[in-house]
Image 1: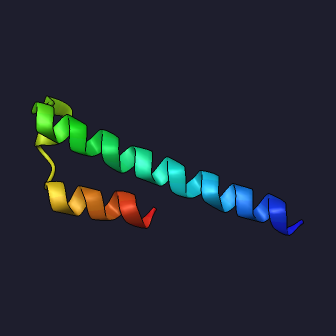
Image 2: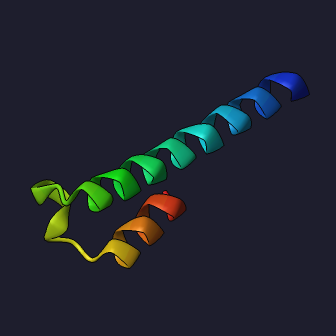
Image 3: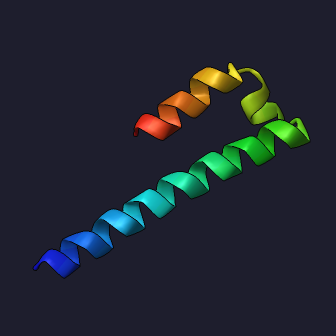
Length: 49
């Protein structure tokens, strides 16, 4: 049972990291979908959720 929870937590943290990497990439490319948001605030929200 502990192994399953450990795997799930690891998978969730990997998903969070991937979202943050994606957002950083979109900001670096100047994507219009994210340019209207504050970068630091958006990254903080993604990190918390």
